[in-house]
Image (cartoon, rainbow, N blue to C red; front, side, top):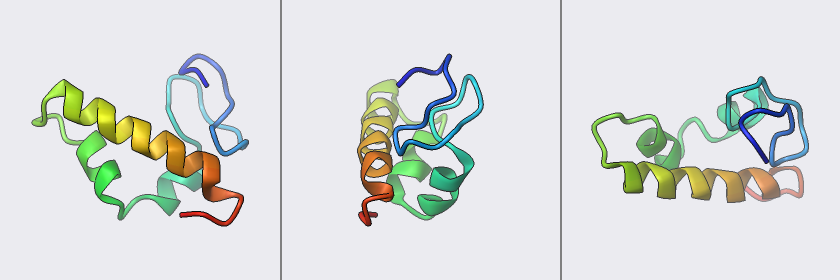
Length: 66
């Protein structure tokens, strides 16, 4: 996965310079990690951890995990 390509961790298509496809963003909109990832007030390491959690969740999204 890369910000430069168009492959989401779930296997879907995403826009360049984004981390997740729109479907994953909607699926995890209420997840605490999405809230932390989007909060510019949090320290960088906390936001990075939230991003890792979101990638793991996205990888399992199409297998029925959420």
